[in-house]
Image 1 (cartoon, each protein chain N blue to C red):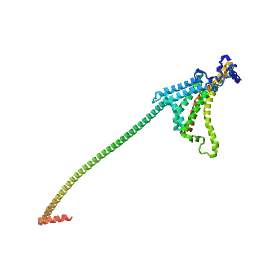
Image 2 (image 1 turned 60 degrees about the vertical axis):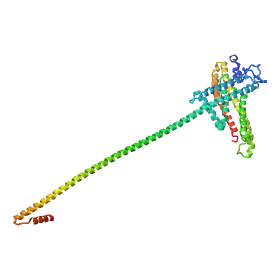
Image 3 (image 1 turned 180 degrees about the horizontal axis):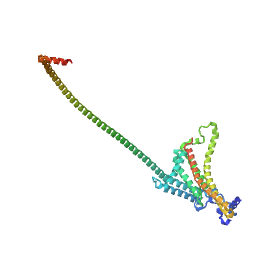
Image 4 (image 1 turned 180 degrees about the vertical axis):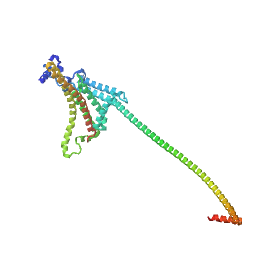
Length: 256
Length: 183
């Protein structure tokens, strides 16, 4: 049974393995260009290529491609406007970049043998910290010390604040954590499940003709999961972006 | 049993003499590199989006909405013009209709007036003729009456003569006219 399948086909964790493509060591820090970097580069290149081609002509009556880019533009703009108001639009390029960066990374991850850059917590954590840094930085820049009102919503009875403020503080600092973990865990778990069911189907077929019906069941599960994962890939990019907008709204209007 | 199969499959994933593989997302050796390339690539994407693609897209969208707005404006203007033209047309049709009615009324009035004038003229002529005829009849009658008187005088003369009387012409005449006046 083993010889039919290379060992990597079964190990659901192997797909997350980082391997060096180009050694790069600057000041004793390992900054090698890895498969993770490669697929991230691919995502960025594809994003720029897609939007570059789609936006370049600027036709009055858009082509299909241009239409898609415009729909993406409108989608993100509505999202920012809806969650953070008109003032939130100054962060529109950031949210747009964030959304499509994650979206393309997730979608590339759906291609077999591709590396899912967003399945690494260091990447999602870095993005989440970037978002929170912008929220805190801009919050203080725009509101000064009034930004602390975020932790003490007005209108509550005085004694309640002793309970409310710690809760608000904890929930605020939980944000980067949940933002990072949600994307990371979704992509990780989804890809493990896909690998398991696909590997399961192969293993069962290898186990004998009697297992073929079960293998087919596992395979169809894999197909269904694949569809679900496409949904998750899009949805998690959306969730990340909309939560970014919601948090930016706090920086713009801290007193609710 | 399926689980067992799966577990067996998974167990074959790495050879026993391998060190148990670390969970790749929690390995630390690649993290600086990941952060480094993420920073570069995310910044690149951000710059490409904010400097090039998004302005271009928003330009296009703005241009389109401007164009649509101006087209709508023009359509509204043309519509106004059309409405105006239609109103002008209706006005002129109404005017023309009024004028036609006036003309026909005038014509009929004129005709009626002419007819009335002609009628009155003819009436007057007829009246004049009637008058003339009446006058002639009156003359004829008075002539006749005068003749009758003469005849009566002659007759009375003859009759008195028959009776062997002799009456003067003046007596006869006055007697006849008195008799005639009496009746």
